[in-house]
Length: 131
Image 1 (tube, rainbow, N blue to C red):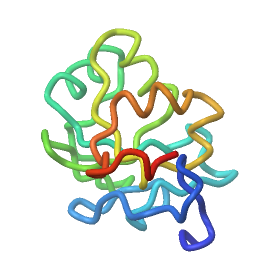
Image 2: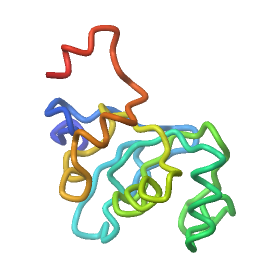
Image 3: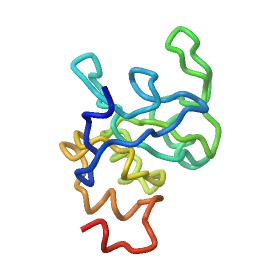
């Protein structure tokens, strides 16, 4: 499924993370569909600040929830997060770095590309290749 999906750069969506396995569908990709009401489309590397912020606004990403196949996160994990929650973290000064190549194009419905790019963790040596 992910091979047909596009990222925010307009190219093929890359995997976000497999240790732990992320994605709404737990396939390693930030793919989305009608069942994904939250739009888990932004691939980030979680930081302590981001995890603390999410907990403070009611989204505990640290505690394991086996019934949702959720292992609980630690700083440094790559994870597909809800676009509106990432935007909220940005507005509160706690956004996590973003992997653009693994962030689904549907994230652009919530967050502008320029803002995502300002948090890019996967900028190539030649940034002109992103244009």
